[in-house]
Image (cartoon, rainbow, N blue to C red; front, side, top):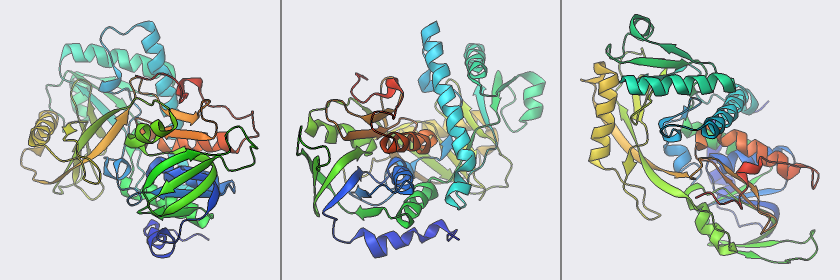
Length: 410
């Protein structure tokens, strides 16, 4: 029987993380966020020799600094004015991907035998104006076509369903499948279970260079030399799971991976009596709002923070904090006397088409990237997809062509 407590990931630091770097491995994963740790788990579950390298600590960057929301509804950043039929089809495809991700989250605590704070309490998307209401209805139609359950509520029906919301809102869309998990637990638990399966982890290990070796030679030979601050490791396959820094490393191999980067604010308040079961979002303004099961409110939604160079963290700006809280108050007036306790920033990497970059480069065989804009929601699922590709019989594994890492994405 596995030990259920996810907090035993401390063993990774005490017993393995500071050990000497192995000389070689089949797979080297670079990046210890949710994508890297979940991929390490799925590969190690399939008995693939795996070493994960992280320059800081596990779950330190975006994976541990987001609000832990499951975004299955179409969000503000995905929408464009006067959407064409092709754009609607694109959104429907994205929703189908999110529906598949929801199915994995249904099973993730059972799979990892751990309490990760997974809750499916539904999500509310609010509209303030009639123009926003039209967008909400258009979004709702696309979601229903893609198989995501949602319900439009207006007037007294809305006020009865969600009496805590501002009563003069134009309407809401309710999606029963949305929810959240604890981002401080998911990635480290994947790492611990991967370690139990035989994966190796090295933290405080900065990758400075990736070199191709045996180019065009025997495919059974090592194809990459990964140079780090703690030594050199050779491997057959590399997976770049560094998120916001994926382009920087890939450029060493002549690959152009254009990413947009943004720092994002998250705010947490003092606890109040629990009443808000559903996550609240806004169709026209930046907002995610939920109450945790320890009764605090977490307020986010994509408000920008100030870029800082590693190893500094992205820093907060008061204008973003104030703007974010103002939208939250507009939607949930009873927050007026609730005290803000803490605010912090993470970093978000995204592509212009908002699709994952996932798979193996045709230009540099053996080199893989795992990057997804909605990393917390889709991270475990795309890691599972990549693991299935990497463990399939050569030539048999397939990934969606639109995720191709060699495509022009910006």
